[in-house]
Length: 185
Image 1 (tube, rainbow, N blue to C red):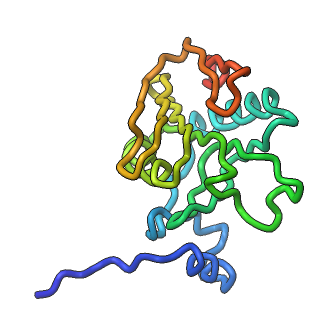
Image 2: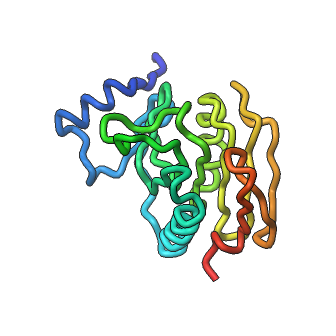
Image 3: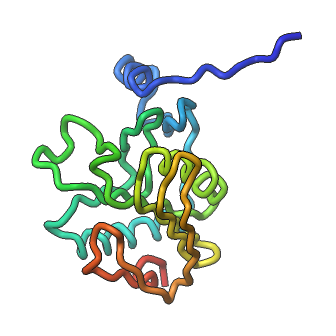
């Protein structure tokens, strides 16, 4: 008996599947390390927290960065759709490409039922892509995981803060973010 192997897809092949109509918006999938993964449905606490946090970041970073909500980013072997991506301002508004690792200033995943994926899988993908600042908003525990100092083997600096903490994103040291503004009341 022979063992089966998964067929991994490149970002280019993934795009060709989208262009050919094999994958469409109704499929709710993302490419993670060459694997096409079904995205979890969103329950109201996840959706509400994502919207609140995104609105807060947009107000704080107006004119300093683009704040994207649940839109693709392109990495070497992945095209995830993080809940929030704070990216460099692009004059073409990313109409000709998705933001790449060199344009990403901060990634945020809102975790309601996906903590294992966000912390164990996505963190490694983001660290390998050299994303300097990655946050996970843990909706259930009402705490924030701050992951920094990316390496090929993962983030070297991981701090867990309560919702009453305040921190500045690496790219915007002059702006402090009270986590209480990111969670639903």
